[in-house]
Length: 199
Length: 199
DNA sequence: GTCTATAAAGAGATAGAC
DNA sequence: GTCTATCTCTTTATAGAC
Image (cartoon, rainbow over the protein chains, first blue to last red):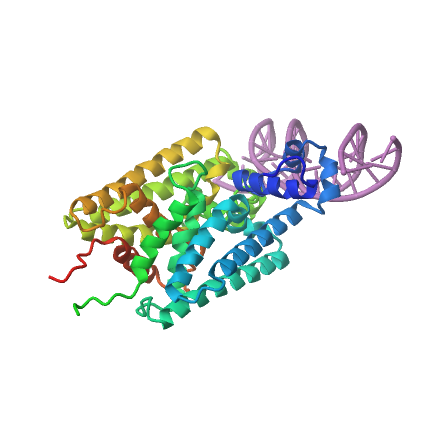
């Protein structure tokens, strides 16, 4: 959550993400938001159009952020395996740095109206396309196994990475980078193409 | 969801799990539950004490079920690696067969009152102890890597398995057993202890 | 075991002053 | 940009008849 100096709209969005994640979107009331911001209920409506708008913006922002983070991380790098490793690191780091927003996007999507939900899902599909492309390149370069279709490589990877938001706590046993190292190690070893023969 | 013949209390629990999972606990109203059951709102209270009771029972049931499923699956088997494989299969199968309850337990826990939440968390810890024990045995038998502490083996495994409830759909591309095979393959390859040298 | 009727509280959002 | 006051609707749960 951002400090007092920042514009109220931005503080409201961060605060909403925290409360939505901790208590759920439907269970979080405008009264709680107002109290935590230190204003009256009605004052919220100067900064937002509705409670649902907050949820929509949280979802979109988390997806824009992680897409940018991964795009930039793989950026100029050409080595296909290295690109997979950098993607994993950037995904985990972005997800954990932006934990409240990302978790809210992943768990409260169902609370959005159909139209807006579709917009968020479309954005998420775009991100998954980026991920799948990086995996497909590594597969084509024969550094990842060809025993599994790329869609299954993607499902396996996102399974392994995303569940982290449910147990990760800042200041816990593992730092974001340690989490990334652990998951990267398991995944890469699990799906890398090895030449098993001797010679 | 169970058919009409079954006692109403049980049908109510199954129905609640479906609605809680689809729309969230807080967003699901007693009106919707009553309508879907085909009775009046007030009639619900003959079968339940409160809406929160339903959530509590759903959470407990899903955990009792998965604990039993995994216990029985590894049952008499002694081979440590085989036990890990059987655990993965039973976990995935139980989670997907009981999808609504399991998903509700995993995502709506925060809606329970502190006391009941603590009870559910204690049950979940028990299950995780079972999982960790099976992994530790395999590690001691040198069939799983010793490079990672058993706690991290557990985090990695549950990450890989649990996220499945967010995308699995009955009748989709993959059957529960195919999902289990995919995840088992990635995990076992990822954490198995290999002798890399030749000879 | 299910009904009609209603209580009591809390929700999101708006009007209009300052 | 924030306030007080309020509107309107929905919520969970109960009372008591059948």
